Image (cartoon, rainbow, N blue to C red; front, side):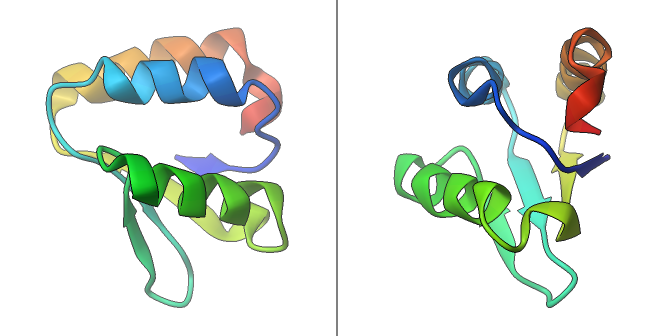
Length: 80
């Protein structure tokens, strides 16, 4: 899922923290951010809010976690 306009950062990170498996953001340049790490969350959110925001794609290890994000993003379609 490509992400663009993250305005609900707290809600987004709460959803990440509710996931059981890894949640990854990947850039076109090959950067991979594992959002299960708090430090990496800060770096990734900076990238989402900055100039790389339209280049990041969300991946989940677990189909269950992926379903959580599909539900979350259906409530916030402006993020896609």
